[in-house]
Amino acid sequence: MSSLTIATRESRLALWQAQHVKSLLEQHGHQVSLLGMTTLGDQILDRALSKVGGKGLFVKELEVALADGRADLAVHSLKDVPMELPEGFSLACVMEREDPRDAFVSNRYADLASLPHGAVVGSSSLRRMALLRASRPDLRIEPLRGNLDTRLRKLDDGLYDAIVLAAAGLKRLGLKERIRATFEPAMMLPAAGQGALGIEVLSVRQDVIDALAVLAHHNTWLAVSAERAVSRAMGGSCSMPLAAFATLKGKILTMDAAWGDPEGVLDLVSVQASAPVTDLVSAAALGTQLAADLRSLVLARGGSLVVT
Image 1 (cartoon, one colour):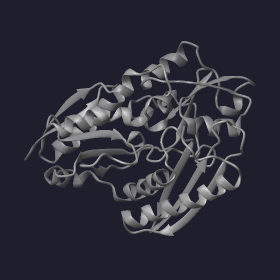
Image 2 (cartoon, helix red, strand yellow):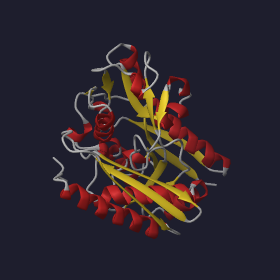
Image 3 (cartoon, helix red, strand yellow):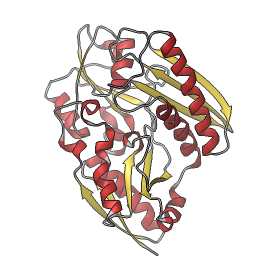
Image 4 (tube, rainbow, N blue to C red):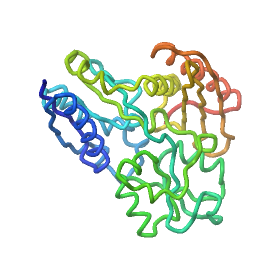
């Protein structure tokens, strides 16, 4: 039995995720405590993440806690984890995925098609903005920052006709009834890693890596490794409207990726590929190849891959 400390953000969803990992580790005989922290990503709410440093703002303070020994592991929503971790840090475990889809949340309208012309939809994700514009160019897409509860409160206060959130977070917090409709991937392709939890550790902490092995979900890890490889190869971050989603059937991994024009001028660019995969290396190779195909199409259509 070992004693482990989990670094976590202090939002309700982040604490649920950390508590979930804590409970599972305790079932395997470990003593576990939580170290709650407020990150820069939680503090800066008046600007889009793409303008203030990206999703890495949600993990930096947790990594500092790992580095100075205050914590042994950090639990993240995987879609918030940068594609390149700092030297000395590793993604030690990817857990089984929850619902990877996006959710349509509204107090007045049943689904996206029901929204009237000019309706206000809240989202600060460039990916969601691009995909929403592709389906409904008549809508007004307005910024929406804050944790899940804050975003729901802004909707309830009448600031938006609808908002788009990750279905996984709503389900994990027992808020499934707030979901009016879910977007199938064919309509709104998820972000790389969406719905999965990733656990970060110091690369030298083999003892923690070994303890986490029982929580890893092989099929999810293969899928998200391919997705993250797409984003990594594209230079992806929250500054790029990029989607990537993979599903595994048997040994065949099928991947879709899409790039949207931040200015909404060019049409959505989409690609798909399938290949047999058996390990993280072959999964990542498929993602890298798909990214090359996507990059070629984007450039051929006059798109820019320069992140500003």
